[in-house]
Image (cartoon, rainbow, N blue to C red; front, top):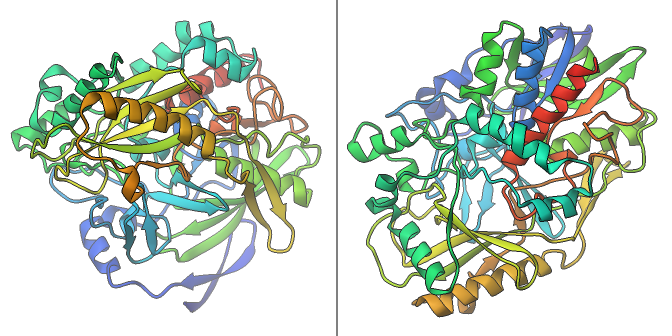
Length: 530
């Protein structure tokens, strides 16, 4: 790493040294392929009436509703704002990924257990490793909507109530806030013509095996734009969603991500602006105002500046890990006094387990990414298996993948290391075992009764529960906050994201619940004047 000689005074007048990293050999290619992310980054204002940290499902909802209420709103996002194009390869793929896929790391081992290597760059997926658990989270404008598999599922009432313990009225969500999010994101299950097409032969095979095992597959609402997916099959776009691409982004915009709805509508009000390339390092308080220490980052990781901003109110939407890190560090260092003992508690993985079983026949086609269906089983822990694709393998290898989501009571907690200022997750030893066992039991039952050709246990590919793509908790509603996300002890500070959820969304993907709770909570906050 080489340090640039120049310094500049920015923001609060603090001088910084701009650090230039030696560019990797791929960076010139990234500049030519995606020049938009290398454009000069605008600077956020010194002071904001409302400042939103993060642009995922919670932050995007908050930004729009604040802007519609007439509040001048600044949204800070550490990742880039990636464009879409029907023919350019904006994003990399899981099969031979490069640095566009990952946030400043040089290797990654995903669910296929095949390690891949690449240059460090500011890509879209941040894999943060803690003892016993890897956490996948987004780093892009639009947050998780850019890199998830599109499934938007409401949890069942009884299980939801058991998790939330009465702090949230489920009927209120189903009557008002789930429908609002569904309308905003244009959610719908995969249409029959696409389900019947060649790239979704694996989806049909998955459903057939499930039916033979006595389950009834239920269609899953999705954020995918089905007309763009049809365009891939018709030759109007490069293959993406139909070619096992989703986890690292869809270049052609096949997912109707948050930058095209909530965030776009927020910008259209003239009251909100989104600032990519700005990482929030700490939050403090100075009298009636919050102070926000930020670092401006180029996609290469070069530090372009450091500033201190101020805001009247701060809305946390940096995801379970990002939001809780900021709060735990602020409590430990004293920059935000009076945060209670529940900060950093109640963290869970949503019971994520990735599973594989053999197909009953070889279809000869690649696998489309959108999830078509799901099944539910409560013979052990309440468990959902979702009809998934195998990332990184765009051909048929005779395998069917599932994402298991298990209502697992295991919880971790965040801790602060005063020596280096880091925040870590303390995850119980063998904390993944119960979820894995329950999901494996369902998967084995389907494989045995459905005519699976291959047993994956022998080669260690049957199940992986050592990761989560759905981190939840750390600043839980009704404990670290009141029941609409006001942080106890800090008036004007709010949690709008997955950190507010108590470790699980009750056998469902969390995105719909996070967005609906953000709608509910920001509405209550605005109605009460704070």
